[in-house]
Image (cartoon, rainbow, N blue to C red; front, side, top):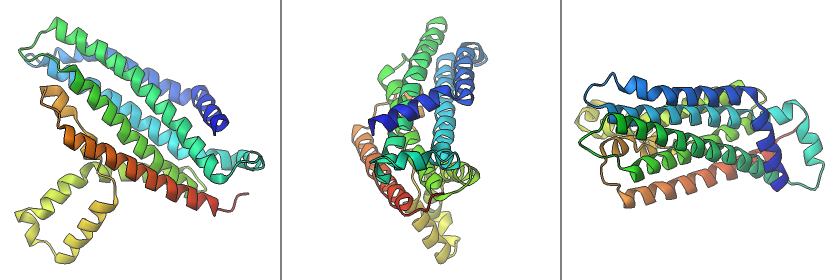
Length: 264
């Protein structure tokens, strides 16, 4: 598994598209102090919002592209035939690929988090606010954003293990991300007073979908970071356990599917 992790890391570091995405993300972070000035009264708050948003977009693109192309690219180039010819099980292959992708995401989140910390500190120093920056909130927001995209990368690998092309894993992952980001709002609408006017069958289907797809809004701590609110540690613990269980379940299904797939 260590060799597969190293090969995945090496392949990601050589990908020029990923280099360009990472460079654009850093440029956007460097532009945050200039863009934050347009908010005359909330420069610090806007700089935190823009910085965390830039980190989130970069991790979203990395998780989607790396996860969607991980298995598909190896199958397309016939790399799996030579790799699986070695004394390596298909389960080890899948877990090794995921470990490499996860390492890239964690390293990228760390570098972007350091850059966003410097940018926020610069903006807050140039335009002091009555409310000091709560750095633990900012760093916790980056950590849980990373967990969200580690889960998304596992889902992208699941689609990649099913598909023979790049389009299904890519667009399927984006669709799951959009649905999972809005699922909490839809659920609250359906369970509220306005939802009682809907069909019972539709409400039942909405409940089923809500519990099946991942709830990505639980990982969004941007509001807590921007306004320096107290962190709900019990809720964060539940979210972390949710991440572990859901990611493990997705990887188990991914291994099961890939183990039964016919390879060229």
